[in-house]
Image (cartoon, rainbow, N blue to C red; front, top):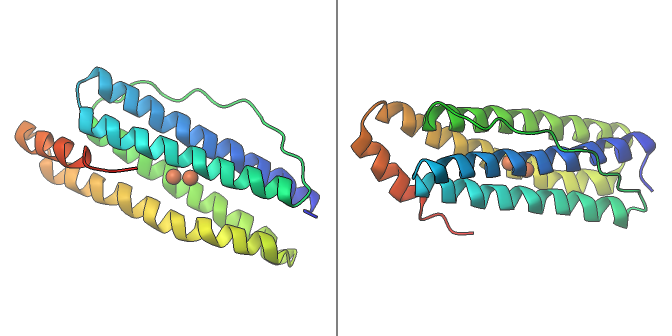
Length: 163
Ligand SMILES: [Fe+2]
Ligand SMILES: [Fe+2]
């Protein structure tokens, strides 16, 4: 069984992961329209990964005998002034998700819920990678500044990300 609070917080996290997918799909669509196909592709793969995170939590709540209750998903921002601002938003968002996962882990530890702790450990590790991915791209975009050539090159590089 899940405690009431953990059930609520895990449901909230399902919503957070679905919003993450929405946010990256929105960024991807934005860059598709701007013809930055590599950035668009990278972000679309990221969005699909986020759907997988939501599904992981969804399955866990059900397996633990909890109830999944879906809430409405917030509408993401549609416009970003440049590639850097989008990826900075992504990094900021991932840091927020890390805080959420830490919060969930705090509750699971307090409640001595070992199954939830074990499940959440996967997310703790995943967030290290998520933040590192966005950080690395943000750092590169800052180096690039206004060089279109370098931006084309990075777009080409990110197009190589596989599922
Ligand atoms: Fe996620
Ligand atoms: Fe993420």
